[in-house]
Image (cartoon, rainbow, N blue to C red; front, side, top):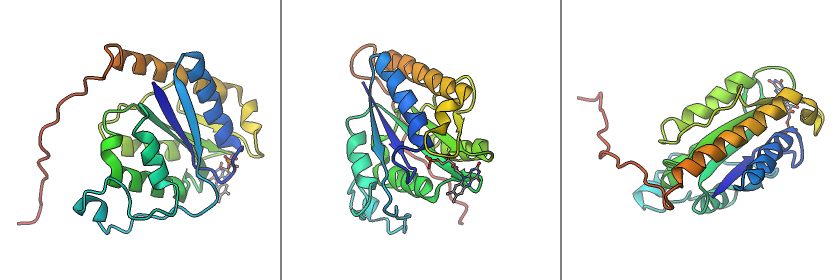
Length: 207
Ligand SMILES: Cc1cc2nc3c(=O)[nH]c(=O)nc-3n(C[C@H](O)[C@H](O)[C@H](O)COP(=O)(O)O)c2cc1C
């Protein structure tokens, strides 16, 4: 079993990484593999609603010049997904939102049914709003959202300061324990037996 963790901070080893790394280490202690991908400093495009990923059944985004398709490729061999974002103006970073929207729209099938969690890291405020914003996307992807003893939030300003947030780091380890617990239940019989879905029945307000 493997969890893919994506660090959407432009700081490779900043506070978001510190929080994700605490989760990764604890997952490994639970016998679950963990890989942290870093978004880098190049811009992450936002979705332009060209619909080509769906019309052509590409299963990937038409834009191949940022991390999006690299994440979805990794997700094909991952059993769970965690995204960590710094808080920017009380919300996830623009990169975090753009990435999730493009991933889920272009390669949603790779995420369906797989447990998910988000982590928000801030200096002082806005983390709970950012956390909720990220989680709401999982809830329309049939992704079980894994919880912890508190919202998955850590505090810090300079790179690595989040390690001093004792409760925040404990929250990350508890999240990892809960993720490992759920993954082991889902995979107890080998291949997961995901529920069958009804054919989508979209509502239209247009008459
Ligand atoms: C553009 C920008 C906006 C920010 N907005 C907030 C904010 O609304 N609330 C807050 O507490 N910190 C804010 N911060 C601080 C970062 O969230 C904080 O330093 C965080 O630890 C950075 O994580 P990183 O080291 O992983 O990049 C902001 C930082 C930047 C660059």
